[in-house]
Length: 356
Image 1 (spheres, one colour):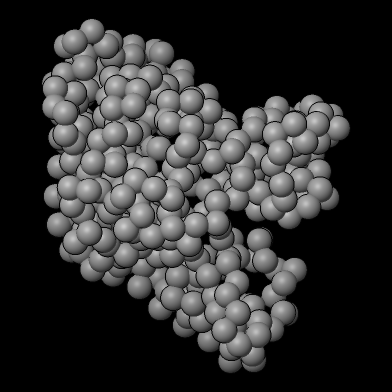
Image 2: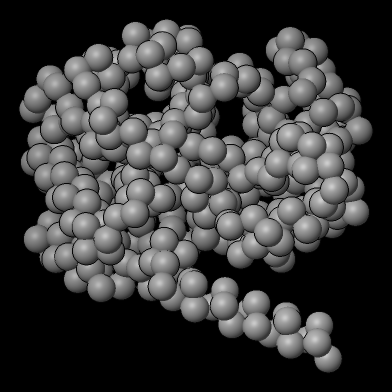
């Protein structure tokens, strides 16, 4: 009876903490109060998909459903990780041949070519794990070298097409969801005590239940997720004081490389902030386009009203870029084309979630 009462009390506490902390709100709930602004941009553009010209060479402007292959092909080869693309359903022997030909070595990471929110992101340590992943994978995926730079950051950048210089509007450091051993507590106990992981108990049980009884040695770090996403529990530290001309120069160069990346967020691993500013020792993991969230609003004690101001500033930039590109020959997607693409994309993600 006491155990039941304790569980009930913890559930009630967690519920009220979620209400008090807007960063834990459901995406739709968070954005509902300002959704009329998005609708206004649709009306002004006379297009439901007003954002599609923002990044003209990425499907749907990079709002949702774009492939990593099309993104990597538009960045300098020296800043992207070694990557191979593997079709689902091919014999595993063919996968092994691709690995041998590419020179990719274990451990490496795998993830869907078209994915989001860290779904089906895994670190593969050996052939047995890869075989299991390939057998279960329902869609085309990528195998990619594991980038071991110690610092992971996100940089939000946009550039108006008529200008040479852009704006770095957000810069954050990411700390992956992790626990540290104390030599006494089990993994399950560490998760239940963790300030973010304890809100994700169902996900943690799904991923780590077979390790729950393991006692981590003192000071040992155990990564609960390798995906640096807010919705996967990563902790963000705002680095806005580090934004300067050196950092801007790096992302201006990337934006101008194919003349078509005008708005979005770069997820990057680097040896250090200083190296990134110098344009060396960094790797672009992903570029997220029109659908990218300005994630520097999180984990910085920002008031909800201030967060809404940041979001609305970015929506205005997205609208302005898209409208300009449209007036200069880049068409908006038709309603039916966008609707069909979005429906196919969401069907795709539902499939992925079932296998995650």
